[in-house]
Image (cartoon, rainbow, N blue to C red; front, side, top):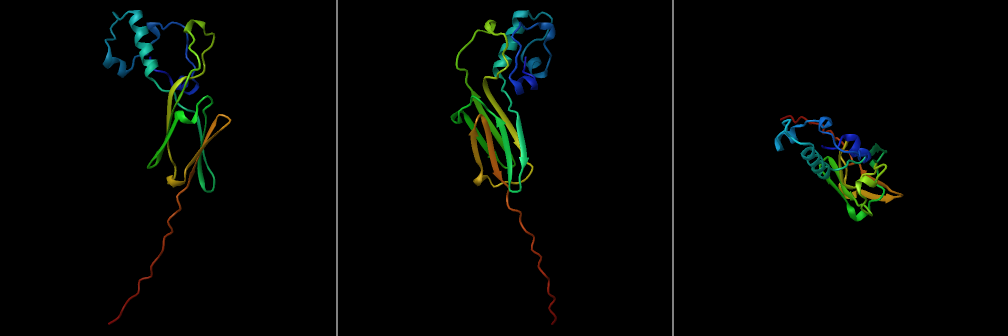
Length: 166
C-alpha cells in the first residue's frame, strides 16, 4: 500500500499486520496485480511491503520572500550534506536526499515508529524568477535553508518616436 501524504510528511507508519479488507484500491496496483477476492492475506502483505519500500518521503517546507530573496526552509535532521541533492530548473527547485538508519530494528520490536528513514524528495514551484547562479544552501541545527536571489526586474524603457518631415 502506498504511503499516505501524512505518512510521507511525518514518517509515521503502522507496525501492525496489514489487513486485506483495509487496503485501498488504486490504479497502479490494479495494473500490476489481480485484485480479485482470491488474493490471499500473505499476497496482500507482500504487495503492501513492496509499495512501502518503493515510496519516497516528502519534506515539510516553509517558503517565503524577503525583499531580495526567496527562502526555502526544511527540517532535515539526521541527513548529511553529502546525502542531499538540490537542483534548480527553470521555475522549480527540487530537494532530494536520503536519511540513513543507524541500526536495523526488527518491526516487532518497535513500540512506535514515527521517524521516516529512506529516500525523500520535494519539488517547489518558484513564485518569481530567480538568479540560480547566486543560490546558496546551508544546514544549521538540522534545518536546511536555501536562499534564492530574485532576478532583477527588467526596467521598461520607453522610446519617444520622432516624426521626420520631408
